[in-house]
Image (tube, rainbow, N blue to C red; front, side, top):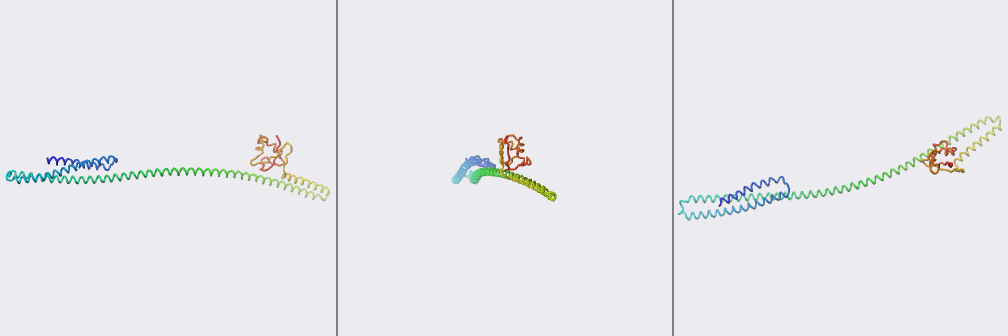
Length: 316
């Protein structure tokens, strides 16, 4: 009976010794939390069985001691009757004591193995707690990163809207600047035209004055020959100068349209060709020559007109 129990206990210990290293060998891979929990449950089941076997071994050891003592007492009691079997009884007693010691040793070893397994289970549970904490922290970080990404997307969208608004403002400012430049360019062109006309009129007036002076000088040379002729020519020259002066003044006076015509004030960008093409004038750019012929005393070059200038427009 004792041998069978010890043999059963040894089988449990061998099974436990093989199962525990195998379970901890799988610890490094850690496939997932559910498998770890199952392995721990299996280990706890094996520990319970080992504890039961240990208790049985202890009980067997105690019973063995009691039987050994009892056997010893019976042996001593029956010493006289069993002298011939004394050696055999002593051997059985020693064997029983040895078996009890081995059972105690096995129980102690099993105890140590149980404590070691419990320690490893505690370490595994700590590792699982650490892993769970890491997973929780990682989940929180993932949530925070997602929030940061959404915030960044909002910032980018706002920046795009601000950039679009700024671009629209810049485009509007550029358009205003272009219009202002066009206006100034037109004013400059008009001013250039007026300056050119003023220079042309001044040159014409100077040429006429020089011509008059030459005539006066010529007349002064003839004074001695014919005083009356001299005076007549002087009067004629003065009359011509007066007419020319009146002509220059008339150009600055208000232009009055004769019957069958009307006055048109030149605008920026106008030309005889464009004016002739207006619907309320001739609606035909090719009739610009009519305007030129009616204003020859004001236009020396059909390509030179300036804003503000007044032109006679004959009715078509």
